[in-house]
Amino acid sequence: MSSTSHDSQLLKGVLSLVLLHLLAESESYGYELVAGVRKLGLVDLSEGTVYPALSRLERDGLLLSRKVASTEGPPRKYYRLSATGNKQLAVRTQAWSSLVAIVDPLLRTRSETPA
Amino acid sequence: MTGWRIEIALARLARALRRRGVGYRRRRDIVADVRANLSAASRDFGEREAVRRLGEVRTLAAEYAQGERTDGLRLGSGARAALLTCALLLGLTLIRIPTFGTIDAFDPHTGATTWSWGVWRLWRFGGDTRTDTLFEGTVYSYAYILIALLVMLVWSRPWRLLSRPSRGQSSATASSAQD
Image (cartoon, rainbow over all chains, first blue to last red):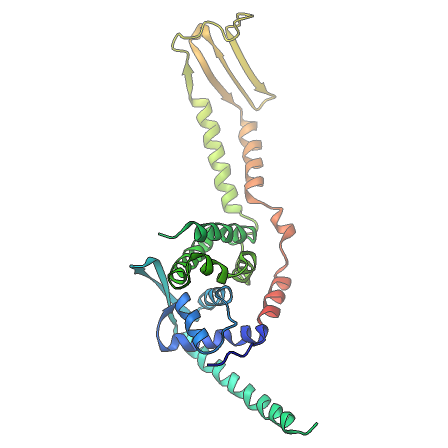
């Protein structure tokens, strides 16, 4: 787990990929996903960013949801990946890997070059 | 049962979403989801901290409203309101309230036994103690057309079309925030 501060725009860009990945493992609800995201080390992501992102993914058809009664409070909205979401996860993972493959060597070269 | 801090935050969120033109059902869904999450968070951190972690309510509403289909011109609501208005006007013509013999004059100083109020050729309401009538009314056809049109115009909120960003602008804003 890392406590490094991350660029908020960069985080927003990868947030949907992270959420899709977490939801591919098991269905979950908003607050639990926030905790999951923080556990990964992305501590800068707030609830106010994650909840609307889930809402957008659901609206775009990548997530399905169902209400589950809770003994600890109001019914929770559990999200899971749809078939489209599964495909999108594969596509976005591929895109991310491809991006990292291009940018990472470049950054390494730069950091290894003596000033 | 959620606490008052959470409910206040949710009421502010609902208001901010309404201002951004997010429809009633969508607003209800969003608020219910946030309520459940705040309730879960408050078990870990307490209500005050859970609300604080949610961040600024207006920013949250803006995030939710990104790319959301907002209700600009509400023609359906306008038409329903116009129909309801027509029904109410019709109702006014159908009711007659008797005095039950309790009123001798509408004005004790002048001893007037009748009263009436009419506006041009729209409606005329009145009463007459001689016929034991406290209230009865006539609504003319002009009123049905004019008032229903006015109600439809107000209820459809056409002015929202002027203040809403164009589709291109809103998607550009959304994509720039996503980048």
